[in-house]
Length: 302
Image (cartoon, rainbow, N blue to C red):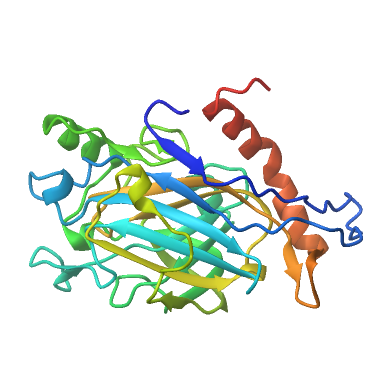
């Protein structure tokens, strides 16, 4: 277990992954077991800074994020547990009177965040209304990310945030990653939102998460709000990823290390659909770097 973070994959369901050769030829579909469990990334409970307040009394405290591959609908489900509602928080310190959620960024490239952003190798999900995102609600590829902390009286860097939290005797983390992890630039404004990108799909807000097996409570996550959204699984590559999400002020943030598997064949729910050669190649490029990161975080020798 990573010393500052907690990541738990609940249950024992596993998937057999279809691999594509380096020639780009798709392998034949093969049987798999359903992927039915939530993957959780649990953040520090005392690093959501709000004008000198952290923890349960802070309106910006993030508790955790969970992601699930739903094989029935071939969708990715995302759930968030935090003190901040989907609509964000009213604030006279924000240029538009509201501090909202940033956009959820997925990085399959194997590069750190700054490099992936420069190369426009990020995927982004704008799910919240009324934010400072540069795009409408939806799923985007070829994303260039930006920081909107300046317009929201937010932090100039993760280093600044960490120092403020430490003075309040809190512990600043990014859930699955240490806040000091080299994945993030430490002295630049955090990349919170999509600046531009190519829209490739839509987002569905999940108003009812009951019956989906979601349980943030098992980790003691007590955020005032739990909500979620979903999107088509085929919109993102397969393979290892790092995903991250900030409040627009960067008063708190979370990251997750995870893996997406092949989409299921709608005509035969027991088989996978081979991915297009280009998508598979992108995922394979990141396996070495991200796989090495995962081994190091979990204390596994290469």
